[in-house]
Image: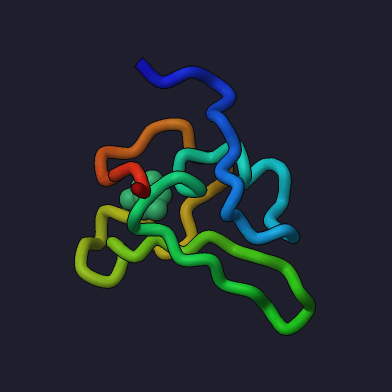
Length: 72
Ligand code: SF4
């Protein structure tokens, strides 16, 4: 059973917003961290490329997702 808030992953980008750190996406194998020219970091869902049910930039924090696969 998952606990809330989840344990933060030590390998997250340092400038990832706090709200995104607590998101399921931050621990998902499908996530990609995208940094803007201004240094903001966004969470991009890799499943969005092939499955329209998943938004490219999921609203954060995401608390449940059928596509979630834990990163190793
Ligand atoms: S599959 Fe779900 S949890 Fe994983 S990155 Fe996409 S939206 Fe986030």
